[in-house]
Image (cartoon, rainbow, N blue to C red; front, side, top):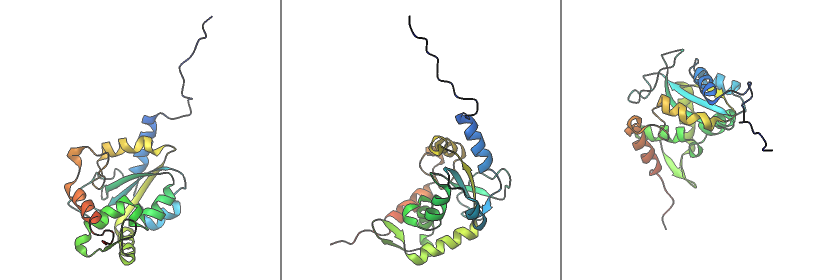
Length: 194
């Protein structure tokens, strides 16, 4: 007798990838939250997050408008294994471990942002502080918890085309100014030459 096998079935209470994507889009498109409020509300769990700015901030890099409040537009989308840790320890503190901060710093090099070399290019401490203050003044945040954010981040970036994202964006939506800013930042400092 040949054993009968049944295809794996997803339990009814486990959402499909499309349902998770829809829920993430709904939450990310909610009202953007000021950073002083967001840092108190952020969960320690994993998920995706979006950074928003008014159209007057980086006006040459338009992003998709927020569904709930069109006076904000998306600049950047990312994922984290710990939303709270990623936002607080990386995006709001250190350029060396935040793609968003490195990109913003590259865009602001003409405004006197300075870098130095540690084991990589980083902003000097005064400019790390200055960039964090700028972010608090000009940016807002939305987020969506998700157990496997890598599964949905790529599709969100592909659909939304945030202007500060480069990886995962369709080539026709990559912003040349962002690529140039990233390159300018990366070559702004280097290891000491012998």
